[in-house]
Image (cartoon, rainbow, N blue to C red; front, side, top):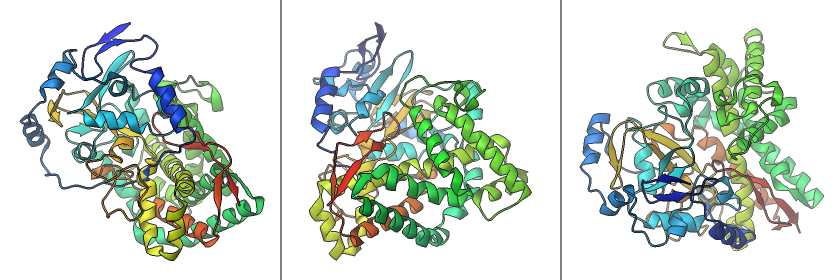
Length: 491
């Protein structure tokens, strides 16, 4: 046993699994197995005063500190329902049946932040309320993406540079790279892809109808987003299944299970690779090969633009280019895939709502936003405090991890009425399915909206009667709220 004396999770930790309550988890999974969770898709904004790093730290430390948080930090936590509030949020098994709404709801009820210990390294502050997530997102000078890492577990300093992509950076480095790709994702340019998305969605749906159903993930949710992001990057059609395979293996690196370090001919120590996955090595090799081809024969695609781009008179380094490619192929594929799968679950759970959309197409945009909110494809991102500060009344020390749980903030009762309901008439208010705002707002949000909207429109055209042939199988991950298998029947 080891002891961690900080936060609401203070107390004795089992050596093999800190604060993981098997009785509750078993109950949670039994309850949710065929009661598919109701959840939505989101983007966030709120009025938060802009300030310098120093001003913000001073201003925050003047906030009142909850006395029970001070007690918890010393190991004398007065919370009554410890079985829920002390659940280990980092355990991938917690998400094997989808988002654990009851756990997050109980944590949100507690004042301040919740401390989550980790086995063998420093724990983290869990940020579970909407407004707190937005505040962290909007202040990179105080809550850094570059210091530490965007995942829960500590990455050694000598590995950070090798892994660093745009999401692992703060301004001005982040701004320098984001400017390179922003033009490809502005609405005018994204609209050029609408006919292609519609044609592919239509053909894939026709095939599914002809077959009477099948695995929605394999037949619809995987091929649509990967084909579009590959079009943008310039990845040949014959390589697209390989891209799906590699991104799937990247996600497997978030399952806290050992991976074969030699897979894909990997020769790089796993600690230098994102998700400690050899699939990252394979993606980097692929990116280098494609980049070399584009140097010899330039095309009208993002890879050609990236290898030729200059920022402040300098071209991207090889590491910057390969990290960029890996980020775009992963983020442009996995997250939208999760949303498209969740769309089916919501259609099964809410048939009347979707039947009404055919006669009220003006509600389709709202339906898309709700899908992103309830799906919350990325469960969390981490930041690291750059100075002593106070968040939600809780003192946070310089260097401590602060983890934003989007899967909780998107269901915050203080932000959304009846948050577990899928409501296409919900007043237009930003969610955090695309991040909490600020510099790291999702680059591909506009593309995801187009793909989801067109897919929904094409489904409605066909008057498809969809049911689940078996319960969905979720990805075993504490990072991605993905669905691995979703077998549907079409009546």
